[in-house]
Image 1: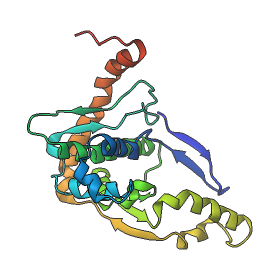
Image 2: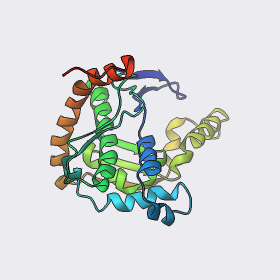
Image 3: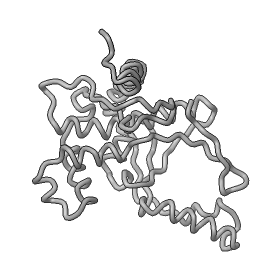
Image 4: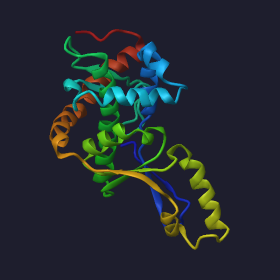
Length: 235
């Protein structure tokens, strides 16, 4: 199911890996193609535009007016490997705005994370809480959406974009004997903020997630026809 196990730096552990091919890249696409000039004017650099977009998303109701986004802009790797799959906005109507589309991107990435968690759980490895790293972990709005969609506590770490470098440095520190084992490293990693699921949002997200899961089966053949042969799918 596109879930992989690999050796961990800790000899007593191994890693279960499920990778969404595009997550933050979907938001970057929106920023460069649909963000307004006045929003860019408020941002002093490319990274700051995401804080501006967070403000926009925070004003849109959870569920994005029942607009769904599938974050498969470069195919997908997990839980179903499919290089021809592509993204879609589904249920887009005249009542929706650009702001609804933006929030649906945040939510679509979270739905895909829940799908990964479901598959890992079915393999016998349930994750009751999540720890977030990377650029998306800087966004309180996105982390709250992730918590609400997955119904899990989410811990956003300090300096999340440097987490990979920090992990390498700490692994070296263990190898050099600065720490006795990897479990001692828990006290070194600082959590910036903890997000708890909001029950008022969880029920609606549960329903929308069920619909989201069905979209993969609906879009697979269409995307394959479009991206493998260049032919439009017959009616």
